[in-house]
Amino acid sequence: MVYIPEALIEEIEELKDLGKFDEAIQLVNKILSRDPSNEDAILQIADIQYRRGEIGKADKAVDFLNAQKKNNDPLGLYIKGLLEMEKNNWKEARKYLSKAMEMTNATNHEILRCYGLCEYWYGNRSKGVGYLKDAFSIDNKDAEVIYNLIQIYILEQEYKEAQQLISYFNKYQDSLKFVDKQLAFYQNKISLFEKFIKAKKLFQIRK
Image (cartoon, rainbow, N blue to C red; front, side, top):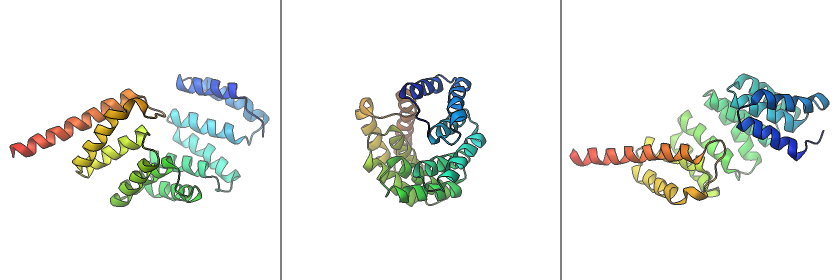
């Protein structure tokens, strides 16, 4: 497999962050022209297409990668599950994420997070909440896990638990980890959640 220099990876990542996807693909294609089966490059193509909203094209790249790995690579299975989630194919997503979770001995909090959401939206709500809690136990500084849990607690009308996590977020927000969203996104969403909970409490008092 052709080695991809760290500087080139950083350049590709920077282009993606700037939304310059065509330029990023051009750089990745230079790698693939020398090594069509380069796994890192294939994952980059999948990520770029995913960010562009081209789920079908991202699917093809990941399917190719998983075929190479004979569906035995947890990263490829996780990404495939993530893409199926984007299409609301919860049953299919569960299948891929379940295998990825098994292969990582349920120690990867991101896989647990996604699997928990799949179970919840598939209808296994209690099971889904359990996996989200497990994800939080493994990494309690992942902003997306906290956000998902607050959202689910509110849907389940578990307002006390939701408020506790909101307080946790407010206390530790400067030390949280973010992947594809910035702190401002979570601040805005969680502020709305908190206002909703306060409104519900006020409504109950007036009743």
